[in-house]
Length: 372
Image (cartoon, rainbow, N blue to C red; front, side, top):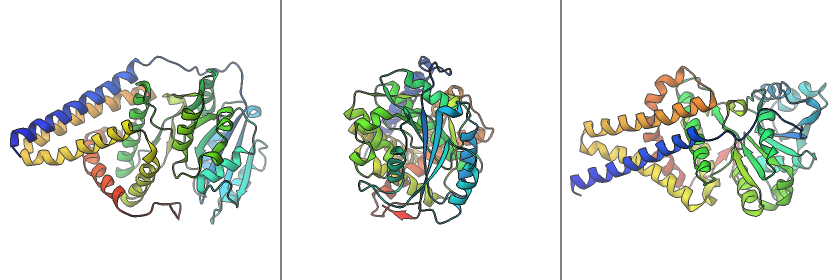
């Protein structure tokens, strides 16, 4: 292929990418404030947590929930133990023994053909008549304003689902890069929603109006999925009159922990992609364009190191503008992100194509010592 054509093709790809990311940043900057931190009428809230072998994380999760500023009499916490083989049950029971609004449920059977987290959440939802169901994970750190901020969005009666942002604790080399990656793509999801393209919800930071949940018949009516958050998100938007809101604020931003190795990272992302096969064509085209952008980085090396470095600098600048916008909106910063912002384009360049290849390989998805 003619060298000039290759260069032109790569320049077009990166021009489109740069424009896309700048537009995303602009939508975050100009967004009007839609939610308040104050609440006129306190709704009854149930926090649902599915856990399996989380003895090292669940106590911290429950402690942060116990510290919520939302009135205790208006919220309850339901923890479903999905056949843990470690000391998870004892840790939970010891903590909740003097807290009447915290409940432990041992999950031993499946309902509606459901499995894993989806099965646990479905059974927990039957335990409560709360107005709002908040869903999070056992390894999550919630700010004390999490419940009140998420619930405030439901003052708009048209809202059926509320999403919040989660990022990985930026501690250690790989985790810090994962942290940026989570923030980057949650910013992308939020920006796409602002542009009228709902992409997905985040299963460790989401809330559902119980009426909307019941209207679709709950998890039992939508069938098993390894990405139960997206499945619920999709069904409520497609089968009810309710809409979605992503509250992009520090007050409802959660923190979690990264995957410890590249293999576990690939397994996690393959699970997400496999569950996302039902995503709209427009979303898949965006993801494939993302892969094409990273592949173009490798191809640019055939045109000389200076051309590659020029593209790398462009991508770094554009990504940094977007990430700084996210940091500002969420009022968050870590000194570890200073150096990782520079390395992040290289992280994307290598791992996105590797993930795409790994996704196509005929391996089963492994998660929580189970295969799917």
